[in-house]
Length: 334
Image (cartoon, rainbow, N blue to C red):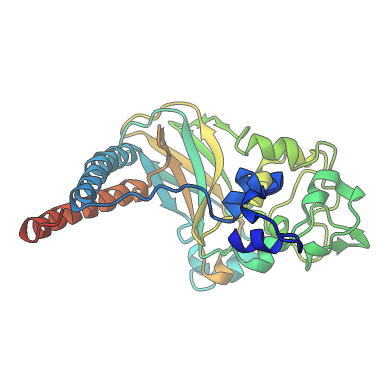
């Protein structure tokens, strides 16, 4: 400040102390940029540090226990079907099985409900060893095409799945091309369980990211078929399986919502699951599971990470406060 003040003095001299700063230099923004605003630097004493760690410990440990209890109270059933649904002659040739269109891919498995499950019961499919976060995979789509359809001409970002029969594929890109296409049907005591497949995607995605007048008229029509197909008579904004799939996962093991069962399941109920095992995870050593889970105020599915993180943080803070207190008693500082 003083250097800049001196440099603006007139050659003729005069009393520089009487010169006032311009309005631009006297404002709070200028003083903030020059780091001249008043600051508050708390003086941390041993007692205040011990008290801070104690408060963190006493707050985080009960919260961690609450989160763990909420997670453990969720009833969840997981069944891996990619290995069980392979016919005996193909046990040693899984890739050949999934690529052979003459072999039936349907299988029925029964699972027992070990604890009362209150509706709504969320049904997920889970894949592992599937890297949706691969850079080339994540980039292989065109958001404007999903919203505007054929009006969007530049689809270079969809490489290597861009065109088919001389026309842009709609929707283009590796993400859409690899759409998950296994299906599940549920029954109890020989009566079908209604599976609600509406509103499984984000409302903001349906309304703002996928066009209401965009139809997948030439999807999966090429010689190399990836995953599932789409109904060409239904606009993308209503293709909720696609909308869910297009939200790529950050980790190689992930779940995506398939539907919601809206009736309660009692303890010891036997649920029959009719599975269409169409999706090829055998080529890359992936696994597939179907998940049935209830929900609590913390969310659907079991996840102990948040509770354990709070417990570890709270316990560490409590131990540190005890350690600092012992050091302070032995070597007091004020």
